[in-house]
Image 1: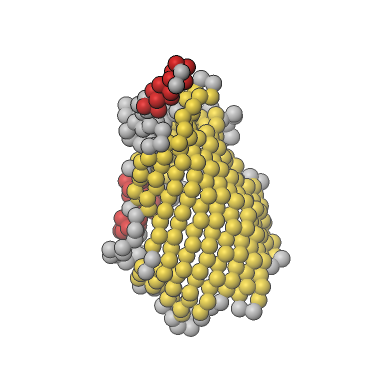
Image 2 (image 1 turned 90 degrees about the vertical axis):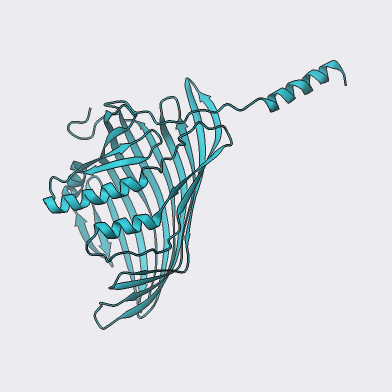
Length: 341
């Protein structure tokens, strides 16, 4: 081997043997920071119910939700209080159903000017006032540097005191469970390194039953955890910004389960959920400008309804739902409501 080849071999060895550099991935918030979030979804689903009642149905459509996000405050630990407000909504869905011997068709169209709901050729108008009321409402969340939601407060001015308290208690319970489930790791990571977040679905079911007086006490249901695995796949530069690409996959599968609620008993033969997503992160500015995902849900349920006209009924329900989504976050161009800068 000549000296040139020897030099190339040594250089290649040094590059391969050089230790990888771990980086810190962190969301960064600034007071009065405003951004616009656009969520675009394509949905397609099927449902088949057999038993005392028979129905087969399919649906397909698109949805687009735009949100205005404003950072109201940031504490010393980097936890931000973020106001969320609906800015725009576009829904275009169509469904067909065979119920008994009849065939039915449904469509719903909605945007910021209102919309319409059509069932078997009869159309009901959704007035613009409904959208105006929705856009007038806001809610705030507290988000930590990993992207985990650690608190939530809903706009409850139009609710009664007791109803507002119940909703807030439920929101606090959910936020407590979500508090350790941010998309970013707490430690520095290298390219190729993975981390995992675990969401205890069984604990959420117990909290929901505890906060809802209409539900009986939920025992240990044996619902498996929802596990999400993240991998830092790439780090590069885009102008002055350090950009990171994170891939993730979430899996959940509950089989041979039972949920007895008194008025309805649910047998779970299969309830599965899988999501594959790609997250693009601007690590210099501390936000995720783009996230793409594909989610598939499959279910096979045995349903016994006890309190229905004509006596108890049994149904076997099977179906699938697929959702393809894109989430885009960018600097807000202009306000869409009073009081937003």
